[in-house]
Image (cartoon, rainbow, N blue to C red; front, side):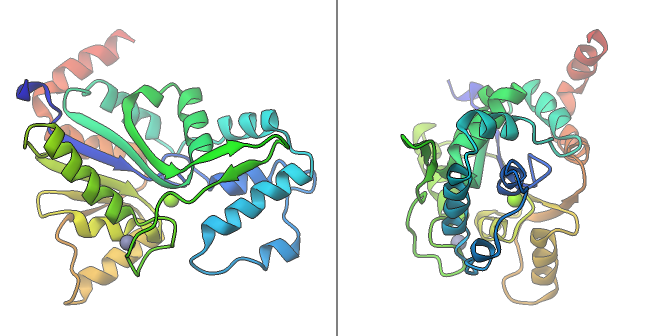
Length: 261
Ligand SMILES: [Mg+2]
Ligand SMILES: [Zn+2]
């Protein structure tokens, strides 16, 4: 039933893209002191964020921050402005868009937040670091995968994830690929996956955040120019405006639905 397959794939980063803040920073605010000790902060090594994040979780457990406290802390992280409007738009266009999260946060945070926001069902897959609470109540993080990309942190190359997903889905869809791919992100680790995008695709880069700055630099240099369109975004509504043009025939339906609310 090829005609029922979504035409578009849209991938989302999580921290500072779907949610307003970095989820680890929000978790740190649950500490009685609301900050990490210097020895922990100083132990951060460039390119090893995953390891640092695991240390933060261990410290939270050590300081008596419970699973319940973490759960409600994560649920209460605000979305980025307009992101829920974007999710509602995508919900009303589910026949067009397949949605995926690709994030270096962790599964517990992402599922907890999306379920609380009421949008978990929109996402076909969540690619992120596996996590579970151990018997001592510590959220244990494991690396997502290993890869051979020299640009990315050891535990995750989002380009490798995207390429593998595109190949798998094309096979599952009987050889039919997506017409367009959209990638929404903000961070420096959101640049690598944009190399898997073609001229028909779009990289939505949060304006003035590292992904945007790095893509602008790449556009100005002659080497490694991104093939995809680069569209800066400030709120989720900027992305709704863009996608509305991709799905003009369904606009009427959406407007009707909104007026009924
Ligand atoms: Mg991010
Ligand atoms: Zn990479």
